[in-house]
Figure: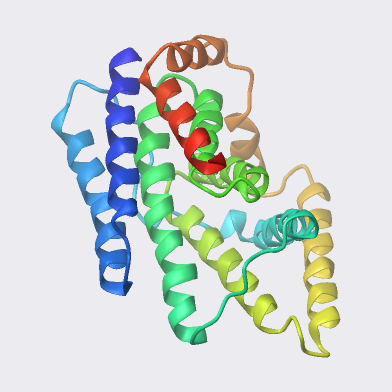
Length: 258
């Protein structure tokens, strides 16, 4: 575990430094690519570190799609509560460009790094610990105002990834959430905005009722298994706290606040 945490610390440092270089559009795209490719090369360099079973294979995602409206509704609600306390910066530019840079790129880059690289390397030690740690660092790379709902989103996306066995599920949910956020932001000043929010809440309620309405719902058993009691969780979290990962966490938190 200590060796894995040390390797993850190096990967996180490379990921963060690569994204610090992002300036213009071209540099931003190069930073996203470098932030994925370089940590992946580091993870492949040490073959003694165990890896989990998460893949890029198009595993069946249908058993989990009914949760998509609920996921978008929960994250939108948390972000709206945050916006009441901290007014977000206005977003401007072409919608299609924003769809690529603010919806698709984060969904691909962040899910590849946090749910494929980090989660997959932590999974062999404890699934619950892997979900918690990957979600913590996912939250820490966001702004302080976004950290609470980013942590919740990380928990949900990591759970979906482990349950489905493929990171493509998290990428789809992340992209749909970002797209819905962009659409609602673009329609904020229109008369139809309350109806769009109401429709989203209605879909979220239907999704929730569908999720709890039957014990035989497809995928529910695998979702529960991710959070089953695991005696290894405490040891995994203590090992991570005693490793360079704790220093990286302090660095991220300090950088975000100051």
